[in-house]
Amino acid sequence: MGKNVLVIEDEPNIIEAISFILSRDGWTVATHSNGHDAVGVVTAALPDVVILDVMLPGKNGYDILRELREAELTKGIPVLMLTAKGQVKDREMAARAGASRFMTKPFSNAEVLDAVRELVVGEQQAQ
Amino acid sequence: MPQSGLAGSRIRERRLVAKVRQAELAERVGISASYLNLIEHNRRRIGGKLLNDIAKALDVEPSLLSEGAEAALLATLREAAADAEGASPEVARSDEFAGRFPGFAALIAEQHQRLRSLEHTAATLTDRLTHDPHLATSVHEMLTMVTAIRSTAGILAETKEIEPEWRNRFHRNLNEDSQRLAEGAEQLVSYLDDAGDARAGMTLPLEEVEAMLQAHDFQFDALGEASFETLQAFVANQPLLTTEAARDMALGVVRQLRADARDLPMEMLARHLKDGMVEPTWLVSETGASLSAVLRRLAAVSDALLERPLGLVMADASGTLMLRKPVEGFAIPRFSGACPKWPLFQALSRPMQALRQRLTMAGREARDFDCYAVSEPVGQIQVNVAPLYHAYMLIVPLDVKDDTGAPVGSSCRVCPLELCDGRREPSLLAARS
Image (cartoon, rainbow over all chains, first blue to last red; front, side, top):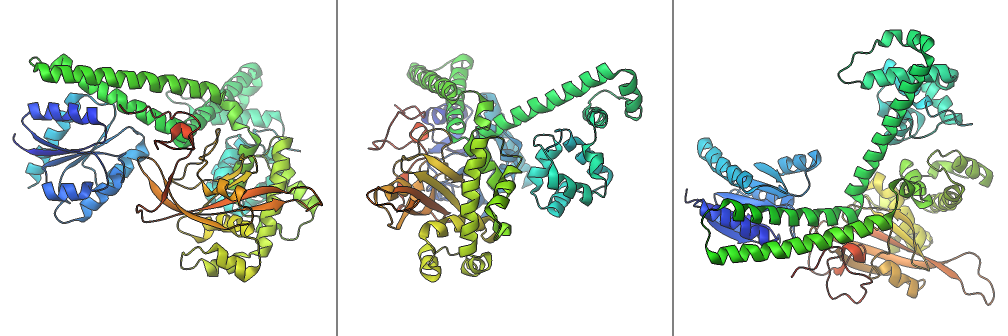
C-alpha cells in the first residue's frame, strides 16, 4: 500500500509489535510515545492513519483527538483509538472526540491490520 | 419504624402507574433521584415522614405503600414478571397464583430478591473497579501487558519467515512482559486479599457517612436553627446510616456543615463565585469565618455554584482520612494511606497557617489542582493540655496544566513517581526495565 501510519502509544513493546506487523504489510511506520507534543507530531507528519492510545503521559488520547479534529490540517485524518477500557461510556467518549474506530485491549494483530486497512479504504472512498 | 424493604417495589409500581418520572418524584419529596432509585430497588429502607411524603406526592394512602406481606409478595411477583426475559408469566393472575400456591409464590419472590441483591453486588463491584484507583490502574497495566504479549506471541506464531534479529528481540520482549505481568498479578492478588470482602467494604461507617452526605449534596442549610435533638432525629432517620458508629460520625459532620452554612450563606458565596474564581483567604477576611469553615463550605456549595465542583479531604492528627469529597482526576485513596506530599499533611505540622500549593496528580492523565490547606484545633482549649488538630484541604481543579505543579500521587501503591523520599511501599505499577 505504501501509506504512512503514525503510532502514538507509550508501551514500547506494543509499539514494536504494531510497527512490525504494519511494516510487513507495506506501511511506512512512525512512532511517538507521549501526549505532550502529539498534536504537533501529527500536524508535521500528516500521516494517512493515526493509531492513538488513550492513556498517554502528558495528555490523554481524547484531548489529543479533539485538538486534531478542530484543526483544518488534521481534522480528516482517520484515527484508530486503542484503550484498555471497553465500557460503553468509553466508546461514547471516543466517538464524541471524533474517533474513526475504537479498539479495546487486548486485540489481535489481524484486528489492528484489518482496522487500519479499512480506515484507508474508507477514506479513499470518501474522497 | 422503617417498613419492609419491599415498600420500595410498591413505590415504584405506584409511580409507574401514575406516570411520574423518578427525578420528578424525587424533587417533589426533596431527595435526590439516585437515592429514590435505591429506595425503589429495595436497597434502602424507608419509613416515617419520607414514606408519608412519597404517598402524598403519589396521591395514595401511605398504608398502600406499607401494607402487609401479601401486598408485598404480589408486588414482588409482578416485578419479577416484568423483569422476565423469554418467559410470559400470567401477570393478571398473580393474585390467584399467590393464593393457590403461596409456597411457590414466596419462593419466586425470594429468588427475585436474591437476584436483585446479587445484581446490586455486581454493580457495586463494577463501581469499585471504576472508581478505586488501585484496581483501575493495576487492571489497566495488566491489560497493557497482555496486549503486548498477545501481539508479540502472534507475530512469532504467525510469521513464517522472521529474521533472527527480530525473533530474538520478540523473545526478549515476551520474557520481559510475562515477568511484569506475573509481578502485577501477584501484587493485585495481594491487594485484593488485603482489601477483604467486598460487602464488608460497603458498610464502613465512613463510607455510609459519605453516601449520606452525597445524597444530600453536602447541603444542610435547611436545618437552620434546628435543635440538637432535631439534628439527632434527622440523622437517626437517614436510611443510609445503618450503624451507630456511622450515625455518631454523621451527627458531628452535619452539625459542622450546618454551622458553616450559618456563617457563610449561600447567597453571599454565589456572589463571590459568580466569576468562577475561588479565593478562600478573601472570604476569611470578609466574613471572619475560620479558614477551615471556608474550605468546607466552598466544597459543599461548589456542586451548585461552579461548573467544576471542588473536592475536600480532611485528616486527623494521625493522618487518617476522616472525610472525602472526591473530585475528578484527584484520586483519594479508600483503604490505604494517602500521599504524604499533600499539603493536607504539611498543614498538620504548621497549625493555623494557611497553605496554598499547585499540585500535579501523577499518572497517565496527569492533571493540575490548586490546593488550600489548614489545620485548626478541635475542642475546648485546656490548660497544659496540647490541643488536637484537624486538617482540611480544598481541591480546586485547574483547566490548564503547566510544569509548575508539585508532583504528588494518590497513594504509594498506585503512584508512578520514582525516587520519592515519601514512598512507603512499592507501587503496583511494576517498574519498567
